[in-house]
Image (cartoon, rainbow, N blue to C red; front, side):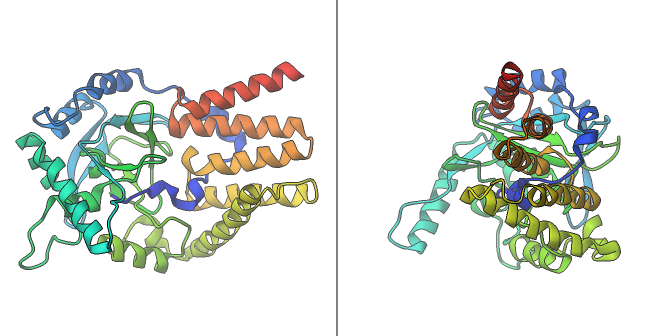
Length: 356
């Protein structure tokens, strides 16, 4: 499990706004109720956090032996639609992302000790569940024993705008694909990690997220990154395709478009000078990502927001409202219907309606 896997590709990419109305769905009530019951219980006092979480969701997905290379995985035993919430989970370990120290060696030592201290406070059965996870820099090396620090560093997430990272026992079982079918979102209000379907998922399909890299790369670069960081050779669907049908070329163009879009947004360069050109870049990026199978609101939401900014700056309020509606659908399907961002966008759309 990678840190910040969905900082990837600028956080966006997928289906066009014409299809979005068919995608939005409210979260599964049963899933939300199960998660709510767990929220205050999934802690160090709970004997077996991963077992109990799986039991809560047993009619939704299951753990299974995926491959020799990837070990355990999760697969769907009900069908999901794009944007459905699949699960939400509380971390069993929360560790500061950085340690104040006079040297790197001292910081590393403090990091290791903090993980060990928190690990020691867990119930014995929860400790066992943690140590059943992979440690990519320790496993398979003669004379090296798997450690809590190795497991944490392999499987933890940095959490957006939070000084502490987190290890989630069940989410850590989700294996990698460069073309994921699930995305995740850290909810600061719930203090939980939420998993959403990035596309429709059939019964029996393995749930797959993305471990990185943090931007679009051709197959060779992605494989080198994953091997260096997680010690495995990626053989996912996208990597097997390589540049067949122009896949690598699309990835490189998506990255260039995303860099241009991010530059315009961060530097305030959105203007009326080249509205057509800027909107063409937005549409092109969305089209390429859809062709490449990088689907789901986690990929598209920031691109839709840029389209909104362009139209707003140009005084095209109809276009701005259209992009904002698309962003709302993307946010609902990747952060949740009741997320702060979704509520904020709903209010902005109401303001549009009130001004008309």
